[in-house]
Image (cartoon, rainbow, N blue to C red; front, side, top):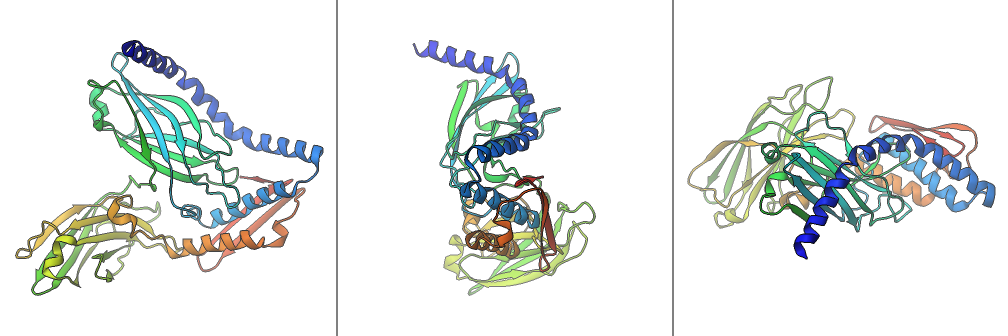
Length: 405
């Protein structure tokens, strides 16, 4: 019975895999149809029931959120912590050299909407390094639910050898009619953790995390020295091969360094227009000799932005558990986005300007201000907002109460 059931599941997965391309082509036109569908549905409801106050509130909240997302696209990223899980199944077809990925369902997602407790979730998949000629893969959008059931299969043409070096980036998104879709969580799965020869199908639940930046590059050169009785000297020499986040210029990097538990954080000077900065700056932390095995050092390389919203260029964590206080340490450490590690989850803080945007957004939503925004809209309008402090501005076009991208 078990073998027959396994064969049935394998055949079912393979058959569904043949339908992948058809589903992906259909998904391409969904975005274009959403605005037309929303406007038609809205007009039908108004014709049958009149203008609903609840409907009006929901649409105007979307406009308000869209305006603030124009000011700073990260404004919705920290409205509530990332929460929830996603269930995914993997199968490798040895005959056709295909990896079949089945997105099954999510549970307990956290809504990013200001007033609604439900999301409009969908899932995006990206294989890294990229599979040649592979288009972006995504599921359908499931409206008004935090526990969507997808049951959609996607195929990746990969040999066994190619599979070993691949990672699958799975992002759960909240569809937004206006502006950029909201990020609900992410998981990155190493394909080399599976042994398809021993077990043909792998199905598991994965906890969703904050977004991981896979474009981080470069190394950080540092040295660590201990001087009795309780002086830990940390020298940041330089960095090499940083990733420039601006198409116009190179980075303007600086480094923040801290030893959690010492209540101190130091910062190097900012250097202009370089991806190979040299600092040679030394900072002193007071750490007792017996405390060294429990301590660790966090380095965070940051690209200074003129308009606020500094860009992270990666982190390095040095554990002092194996550090020999009688010998200095001098080495190059690979930079990576470590925000989802346990060491940094409790330490990570977002930029102050973005946090002010979020607080302002919630305040405007609670007080229903500005008043002209929270009313019935007819005809064509353009609503704009600006912030001198952040050097940011944004505007939204509205046609008969429907926000238009």
